[in-house]
Image (tube, rainbow, N blue to C red):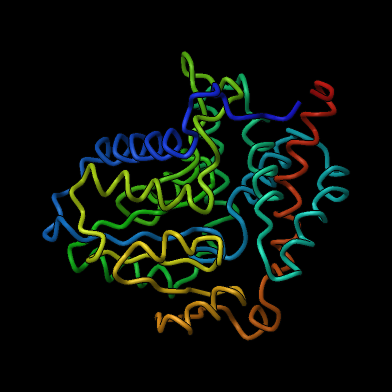
Length: 296
């Protein structure tokens, strides 16, 4: 049973996802009681996967769930290769990422949000913290020191994205929002996963609410899929860019930064050995759900 966005024919999916992401981000940020920024109209927006951290956060999370017996290792090995093959080609496949993230969200349907948040905190400490790029984190800290708010923008579920932001001392996170009723996931998304143009829409929604001047804002990403987000700010930066983004950044005279080691940079998009297992986990999560409940 694959999760599909919960919508009707009149729903503007991108607008719904963007609005939900902005609402969730501001709610979490307000709960943290941050200090008012000295520079209230400027902000920095950072992609997560392969920009802030090596590899894909949702797959590290799924690998952590596998270690907690949410699904078995045979699925982890058998079905992980599909996503790894996308990365080996040096490009993020939108359909593959869409399906994997939907599957991972579907897997938690019916579970309490507090339970998943608790697991997310544990898995971040176990598997994700060591994957953070120190160079990218230093850029984020420079913005904080300058009085800018710093937001993560990712297709990863907002609960996990918010954990990463808190652990890194950032302002908050825009992420994919899943529907919650009575503290439990329903198995539906609010709009589409926050991917590609959806990220740009979410950034604009947040900017409108917070009175940000996008010409004074920064955006950082590794992926050509984030070209809409990068193009909407005054200061776009390509970080660890894939080949297409690197070419686009050169054509536009954008800043390019690469914090990968020589080994990681040898082939753009090839995950580390640890990442291979992690990438496998997210796809396995959804397939375990299909096996348990049957095809939709």
